[in-house]
Image 1 (spheres, rainbow, N blue to C red):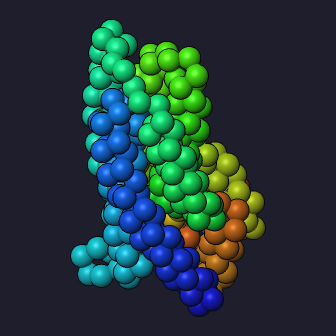
Image 2 (image 1 turned 180 degrees about the horizontal axis):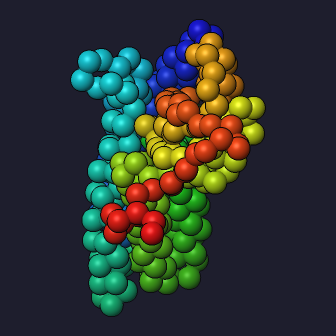
Length: 311
């Protein structure tokens, strides 16, 4: 247990370091893209600047979240601060939706009323941007399981891809003089922004609404619990996420009459099983007593909605 905690702390520190560097590099890149984009009339660069700027809140937020997630639980925040990161990802994604929509509007306007584009500067900035975003993606390669850092990683990967498109586009504009390529690229980048935002909204809302963690089914978990010797029946089961990679479960389990030292053994087995097979580390199990078959015993799963009971 101790070694695991230590490892987590180390992961936090390395990630924080990557995030800090990424933040500085991204801010410098955004400033460059805005200035050059406006002066060379390139919507693709301006869109890409926005695309990169949307990484800034998520970087700052990831940094804050990484800091908070390391804080232990206190008297008010009984689970610790893992939700901080999820909330932050949610707010950030809403921001992205607004930016993406605005860029779509700009792009259509440019297609209707084309402007001359200076392809040289566009090409240079595209290459610089590719280096920066590629570097950040590479640095975060190992941290993909954290929802916040995954958001940053996907952003930067998307950025790097759009930079490749910008470089190619600038080269084609230079060769053929067809400036419509620029707003078309702008539109594609806006589409990328919207697409990634919707994904993050969906994932973070799921966690905030306490829904079942991604890719988990109550049926599978219940079946696994029932495999433990001595457990007769499981009901009233809840599974939810605290942060992007920590899950909790509570359930009622029926067992025969036995001493608490024996039931403790069962409890321990269930906890081990859930941690190993499903990565669920906060488990609350409430035991209820059932009779061996043959003895008189009525089991009603739920009170009927009519309230009258079975006739």
